[in-house]
Image 1 (cartoon, rainbow, N blue to C red):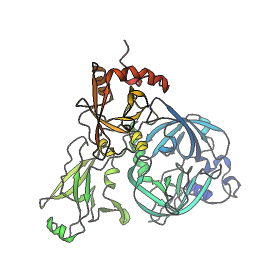
Image 2: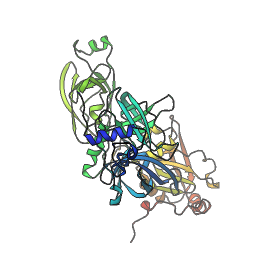
Image 3: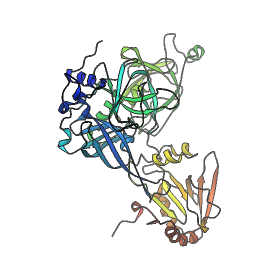
Image 4: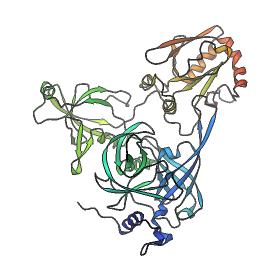
Length: 493
């Protein structure tokens, strides 16, 4: 089917494809209607916490790209504005800077909306329209402000591959589009235009330096999910996959499972908990159809135009709370059910997005709540022990992020980056609970049960009076303003 674009949008794509500035090209609109004005440069100042010593705030700066999709609203990448304390936006045709604020950030999809309040920002700007995810071999144009210069840049290429990939910002696995147009630092957040329609086909967001011409964009259908998600004023993110599966490409395996010759599907290997209710699937079920799509023996489905997708595709494209119909085989009988699109409620805190982590200092021990920020930077050996379902509301994993050298900590300087499982045999529920257990100790000793990963557990035994006396000394030595974060302080009278 031939795809057509509105004349203005197609003209914009043609203007971008030409080597001349739009206002200099004969027959093209002047600067006031320059289609390039919708592609902006973001200059970002960051303030982010030190996950090992949470009372310390680190600063940095960077730049990225964005595209105006509605008056005053710029679509960009979450990693471009993560931990932003100040954002400035610059248009293509001028040097004026406009202040902006993050409106919505979805770390799952590495997408964000940034809002510019100044009405003057929209002068000469026509928002770009979101199109459809392109197909293999479609021509595309990546537009943005990558390294190597300060002005706008274009790189042209084709779509090479469309499949689930790991989004490096939050380590999620969603649909990604590989293109051979160069994607470099600074391109992130900029639009990738479908030259067949003139519409935004995706957002550039990462590359792979292990090969040549391995650039990636977030496709239009993922962007649409994000925009639909935030319509209620909050970010729920993308549903997670509640099961693990194995392919069924062995004829002997299919016969053993009682499958007819014309049936295809995959075998459920494991079903996860923590999804707000019991998952109706069970191990050894065979998924035959999901979301109205027949499942092949290798775990693929086919969408319009016979395009292949993973069987996870109909799940993560649902909004959280929606139902996904499933047809499956169990014990030789075919049945139908539905999965509820949901996110797991695990013991790790979500991304902090600029908020300070909590902490408790006891002697030279720095305790904090495990968060995705901590996992991302520390990459602890006990990661799998953190990603477990909450046993009850408020259940959170507590870790020792750092051991500050002091005479009271001799023998324990290697016990940082450890999971705190218990205090004197009492399982730790969260950081506030841990603080209460320490404060309730009436002298004597405390024994912390620690998990260092690889099935290596260790006990840390400390003298309560010695560490209490050492805490002010450690605070002075390391310039720590308080022995705990403000959220752990008792309520004011």
